[in-house]
Image (cartoon, rainbow, N blue to C red; front, side, top):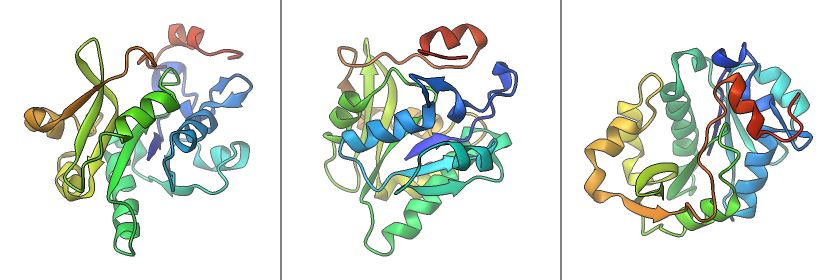
Length: 196
């Protein structure tokens, strides 16, 4: 699941999903990385400028979820995405989800596949680690979705849930294959190739 609803408030209101990287929107890079990592179907949660993202980004084959409450923060997008997965799960869908953030282009398919490889059933809980610190992506087994969604508020996403279940998380070292920087401010745009 790709969380791509952010409005880029600290970027002058430029939706993060549409930021250019190597000539394509960030949302396309993340979708391609998820597919390369063997994840699917890919659920993409949109919010800010959702219509423009649908129009300009190649999201064919993705399950696109629009979060009308995206301005309330990442928590609402995580809830919308989990609800979408939950309805798919009822018809024989996913047993786990890998949660990826659109504004972390330094995390690619190798790190995603590594964390996905930590799947050990519907109670799975795993996260990438960088220098011993927990980061993204995060793997959530389906048995955990309801409790994660219940606690997802504001810009915290699953942070409170992960903190409360720290001892159960399988940390997967990814520092050798990924860089966990975020694209949050104008200064961060230097990480993007071909950003205009």
